[in-house]
Structure formats: structure tokens, C-alpha cells
Length: 263
Image (cartoon, rainbow, N blue to C red; front, top):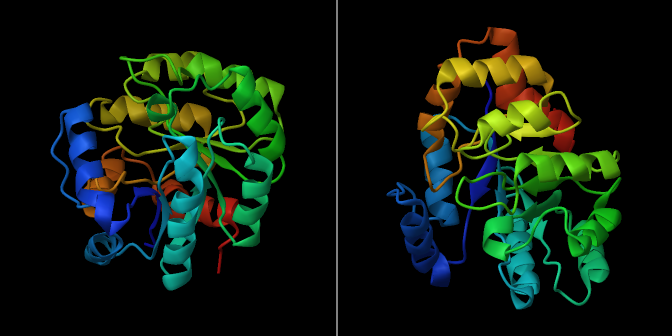
């Protein structure tokens, strides 16, 4: 079996420890990874993961350019192991220009984390960004959290209806901790789900139900490194008890098709 990890975070060395400490405190969970590229590569090797999608989100407008510079450097340093999504922020003054630079440098999409960027995903300034991205690059969207309403599934459903050409990966099976809302608003729509940070609360049989109802062609394997390790995340996906053909799609075929990296 091949594995492509569609959800991993990495940080520049000078801020990695601070970033992981913040995230551990926010999510009340000790993370096994340190958030740096070498550590992720070791975790990938231990799990047999061939490639990973990496990203790092700009929580403020002034972080957009340095974050993208970092991601471009890492992708270029490990072209056989990493593809990267860049980052944009609705308050950045030149998103059109930065999107052009993202595309020229071979980044494969754009990541948003509404909780940390403090943006509602269906608010007007985000609608402007979707207009730039639709039909050009896919979007990875952190989804759901019972503590906030920035990226509730119903909000994404509105975006998908307004932008049928926008390719969206709804992280965490479409709604971190909000999976009843996922079933109500997102299952069956033109959106991908990834499996990251799901099985800590969503029972495997319910995850299987969502995957089959939505269609396994739109499910991507993701570990959420450094929150968890790829080896553990692979084992979590296998608890759904899907057949070999479906697992093949989830673990690598769907990602290869979406990101244009199939061999």
C-alpha cells in the first residue's frame, strides 16, 4: 500500500516550539511531533508515507509572504517528499499578486484556518478570495469546532453553492467535533474530506457511514502531524473496515488525482 498524507503542518525552526506549545494549549492535547521538516520526514519514513502535503497558516496579514517563502523553500528542498499549500489572509493588501507568486512557485493550493485567522468563511472578504481561487487552486479549510462558529459546516455549504468551480478540502472529516452538522450540510456535496484529527471522538463506524454516504472518491488520508503521527493515523483509518479498493483510494489514489502527482 502507498500512502500520501494530505494534512501536515510544519513551522520554521525559530518558531516551531512556540507554535506547538500554543496549539497544545489550545487543543488540550500533547503532540508527539515537534513541527519541523526533519521530524516529519522521520515520521513519514516510520509509517511508509511516500509524500506529504505541508502547510503553515498566516494568522496575520504580515505573515503571508514569509510563510509562503518558507513553504516554497521546503518544497523545493524535498520535491520527492513534499508538496505545499501556500497561505493567504483576507486582510493582506495584495492577495492577487501573492496568489500569482504561489502558482509560479509550484505550490498546489491555499490553506485557511478560520479559527486562528478570525474569519467567518462565508463573510464578504473571504468571498473575494474564493473568486480569485475558483478554477485555479484548491483550498484546504480547517472545519468545525464546537467552541467557535468561524467554519461551521453550514457556512461552507453556502460557499460551495456560490462557487461550484472552487475545489475545497474540508479538513477533519468536514467538521472537527461537528460531524452531525457535516452529515446535514456537506455529505454529498462537491467537497473533499480528509481524515485528520477525527477518530479521537468520531467512532469508526460513524466515520465509515460518512465516508460511504459521501463517497470514498472524495476522502483523503491525513495525519494532522504534529498533532499525531502518520503511523497512528493510518491505523485509525483502517478501523473503518473499508475494503482494499476503498483504502487504496483514501490512502493515495484520490490525492494523486486531486494534486496531479500520480505516477
